[in-house]
Image (cartoon, rainbow, N blue to C red):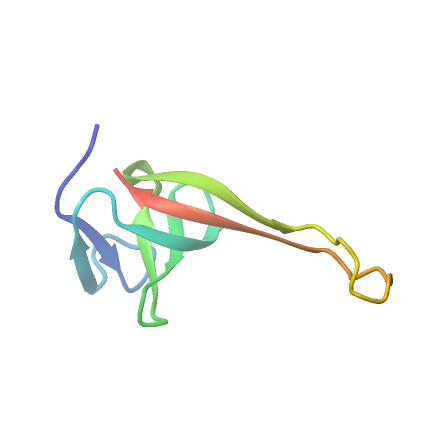
Length: 88
């Protein structure tokens, strides 16, 4: 089920200030999730909270594999994971 008009709150409380209202499909980086509220990083670096029932979490994995450089030395591999919240 997708919802339109999901509110992003200033605090994990439905009576706190609404920072934005977003449409289904909008994605944000997840900072934390306590099971009731998901803390997300908004595009403008503002932290907001959305009810956990209104998001779907996805783990995105960026992986770079070392192939060595022109001199035959190993180049360290880079591995980073990010969890994204998609408004549903």
